[in-house]
Structures are given as C-alpha cells and as structure tokens.
Length: 122
Image 1 (cartoon, helix red, strand yellow):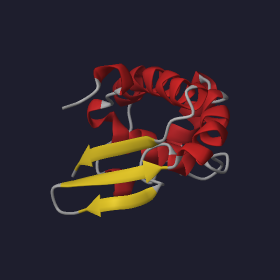
Image 2 (cartoon, rainbow, N blue to C red):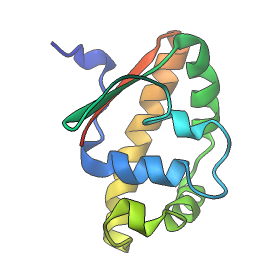
Image 3 (cartoon, helix red, strand yellow):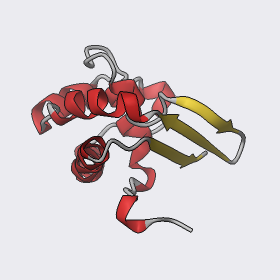
Image 4 (cartoon, rainbow, N blue to C red):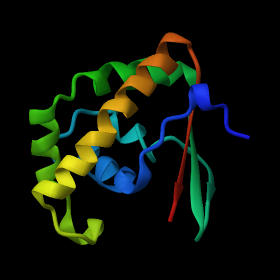
C-alpha cells in the first residue's frame, strides 16, 4: 500500500524532469531527484531508486532553487533523441505542472529527515 501522505506523483512527466535536471548546465546533484539514487530494482517493467535520508536535504535545497525560467532553459537542453518526443510549449507546460509538487515533496521529505524512493514505469 502507498502512504499517500508521503507520495508525489509525476505521471509521465518524470522522463522530461529527469532529462532536464541532468541536462547541460543543470546544477550538480539534481540528477538524484528522479533516477539518480541507488538502484534497488531496474528491469524492463519499472525502476526503483533510493536516495538516502542523509542526502535528501542537499538535493531538496538545490531543487528548491529551480524556478520556471531556469527549468525552461534546462528543458530546452534535453537530448531529444533520449527523450523520444518533440519538445514543445505544451509538453513544457505539462512537465512544469508536475515539477512544483515534486519540489514540495522533496522539501517535506528533507524537513522530516526521510529517505526518498522513486519508482517509474518504463
């Protein structure tokens, strides 16, 4: 069962968020937001990644500094071949809409000194 109080969903925006936060010019450490922790499981069906509690505060602090202008620049730096879809104003708006709740989630996890586990369907 999911503990909904400690759940943040990203729908399929996770891919663009991850690629943007790991693109050229992204601040160090942001690659841990989505898929950059310790892999607990990685298969053809989904991924499970852990960021230990000791690292969450640092990630959350850096992640909190990403505003819409900065994220737009990082989004435009996404490797289009890796993303597999065209970058567009609509896709950016969709992705940005999922980013703010994810930032809030990371802040709550940092404040509570909790680890973060990220799961994504492939």
